[in-house]
Length: 118
Image (cartoon, rainbow, N blue to C red):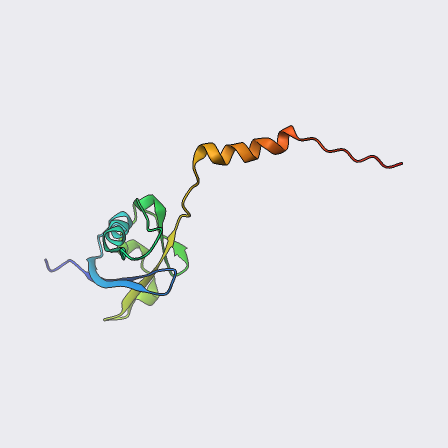
């Protein structure tokens, strides 16, 4: 296990609270990090994520792709020895029901308005 490198990561939520820090292998994928966020999500917070597709992780101003590893995503700033990498967590807003969303969008098409200038 001499070639394995561990990085310490914490996740900053929208309200300023943190999840972590925890240690992850540099070979850990972003999808696995998102699963970790889901598992550690505070139960008292409303509208938590349901799947990893509801979560976006941002590090150094870049949205991280699910198939990338932690080692591929870190920047030169993260190379500080003993430093903790802070990743920002952004959630996809909850979607409305499909049936109720489509009806209001159809109604403006049915109504017609005219202006007559004399």
